[in-house]
Image (cartoon, rainbow, N blue to C red; front, side):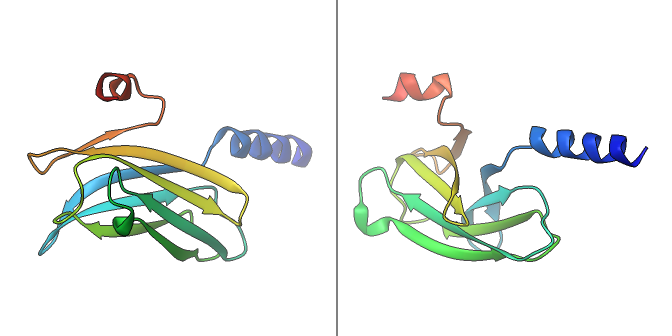
Length: 126
């Protein structure tokens, strides 16, 4: 029975892939929040958020964050105002190995269109 439970938990954990999702949030000031999620680990982990601007290298940012032991996610925020319009890439690197990325599009109406790098909507924009 223990072997079966171990096998099931390993199978389930292999099906769960790391993911990064970006959304807009409204606190006092509108922000873009990208949240990285992965399987909980018994030790603290270090991840790096790499934000790549569509046209302004000065707006790129790399920020290290810690995921506490036993937790599954961490997030990074950027102010919405002043960011370039267009296709942003957000890549999260965990332990200098696993890379997960997503794309979001900031449009002129101050909206964020969430998408994935392989989303067909990107082909229409490129």
